[in-house]
Picture 1 (cartoon, rainbow, N blue to C red):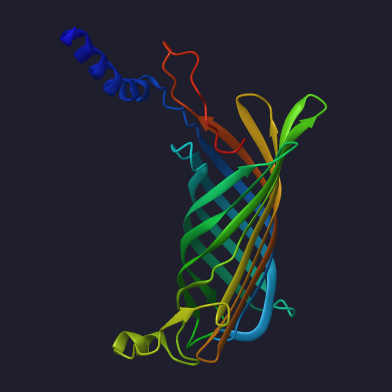
Picture 2 (picture 1 turned 45 degrees about the vertical axis):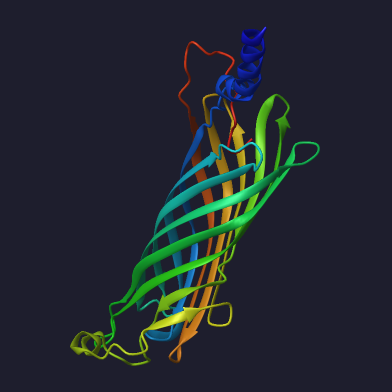
Length: 279
């Protein structure tokens, strides 16, 4: 009798742990996207010139998104890495500003599955960008360096459905920084002077009053099976002011990309619980 009671106690104590061990961990596909964009660009930087320059914008972005493990807190996390290039000219057409930037960001968002194929997410991101602007006609100040780090909120709204028999997803994603730091020299200060040691007041606190930015991506994903075609529109706007130097940057671009889900499944477990990042 004592042995029977002892076995019942051990079985009762170990039953919850056995259930946890037998529970199958969900498979979380990694959604990767390669996106190219082409559009218009408008640049203005009073350190180089008081005139606004307009021209072409080109960009290439790699994006990665994955659902988190916890079923109690349905979140998705991801990061982006982008390279962009701008070629702009003044209205007279006798001067050109070239711009190049490397940008990266990490984000985490809590998402909710709503009714009728809708879902929404709210979270935050942390990002950084580095680059330069170059105006060949200037002799003393031909270039302006770009450098900034920031954090801010990010949100998205998505609808998933079908166009006849073709699965599709319409998504709008928006982000805007709230705090950070950015680089800006004094008006008329030469980079040669900075090299000699005049490095005061070069890094500034970024907040919506000194540096504000908006990034928006409206996209449509057409799922053809193993891969997905992404078509969209990208809008980026930035404005900053420090040391009597004002900078403006606006771009409108058409986006074309390929989205693929990378997943590793155990062939012995065909009933895997798949937890996707997008859908």
